[in-house]
Length: 300
Image (tube, rainbow, N blue to C red; front, side, top):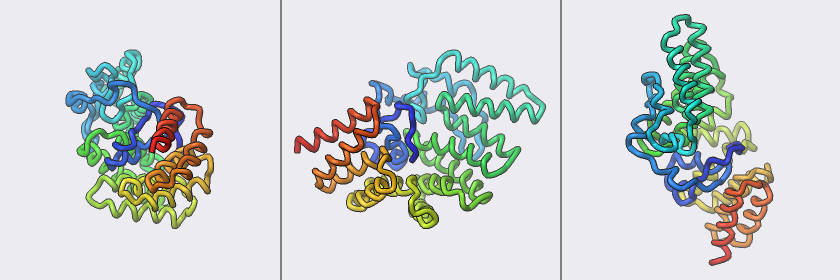
């Protein structure tokens, strides 16, 4: 997965490897969460609009959570400023009142951009989907699919994983119907299948990506994560080693190569991988995570 510049994501490894959706949350940038940010209430979960199967349009409730951080289960780290809530509320009112189809599409795009900016990815996906339905095409469907996939990546419960995964799969299938060679869509579709009743199809799709592009970093990375999740640590080492040969600067590849090597008992090689990973980032949270792994190796 492509590294992300923002440092708001930390996934505790033990949890990440225990949940299917957490495979996507395995850090683009590994940072420790702030105290209390991961505590999500049932009320907050209810306030997150369910977009599965073309659900109703989201309301301002999706950015007006009663939780102190303004968090929702899909986006537990983003605080929504009052000005942003007002701006989205104003756009929603205009969208509801607008009768001109072209103007309504422009407002839908504006809403998608604003929701994405505050990390309400399912709402962003909903509005991009409205645009895609009016103007269908590969890129239009992919914009919507990518936002649902992002929301799926942050899902806090298995029910939400399944709902958002199903929506992402539906839209990625439309992307691939337009262009079967869209490997990014096929990779994400494969990962979305991991939360379905047919996870084998997900692995099949990822392998198809590698047949088409043997050096596809995203597919190799995800297959490495799946190997870790299924305790195939030797296979995970192979995947992450392959990834770091293709791209020695792949931050996550280096980090999880160290994790996989440590799990196989190859402590010296794990130290080398973690040390290399440490040179690839200046993010304090990431460096703290690397140091924690090195301390564990040195204490054993």
